[in-house]
Image (cartoon, rainbow, N blue to C red; front, side, top):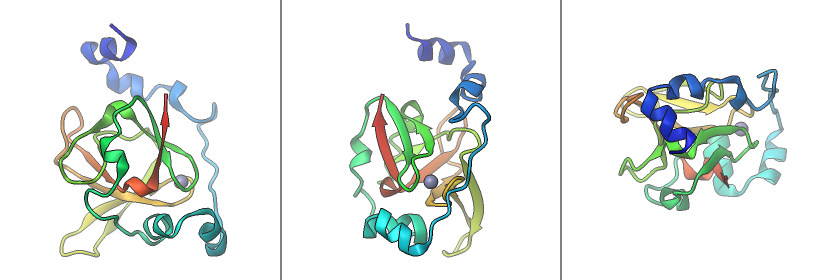
Length: 158
Ligand SMILES: [Zn+2]
């Protein structure tokens, strides 16, 4: 039995997920990354720019990350901030990479009224890059679905 199975089995996963050991820096402080539009255009592909900087949405089913099932970390494609652990990823059958939990204090949210209903948009706390939307139809234990654009993420295998 590995550490994760033990913790899930004991119901301690929530405490574990909030342990200071997971923070990027010992202080837990995330320095904002602010670049000009021109700097972002140099740094990102055209598609990545559209998603991250213009709050775009990639086509359903287009992300190679949908089939990614290795252990590792999903980080912001704009700045590298760690956002999701692979064990929180699940197949939502929506056509976008989906997670039921995000690392603490890594994203900020705001209402998005661009469609007929108000959705909750979330973005990277460090660079402000748009990631996706949060829905309340996710699996236990959180019931949340972080519906993420694959283009907004980079995967780092463990
Ligand atoms: Zn970022």
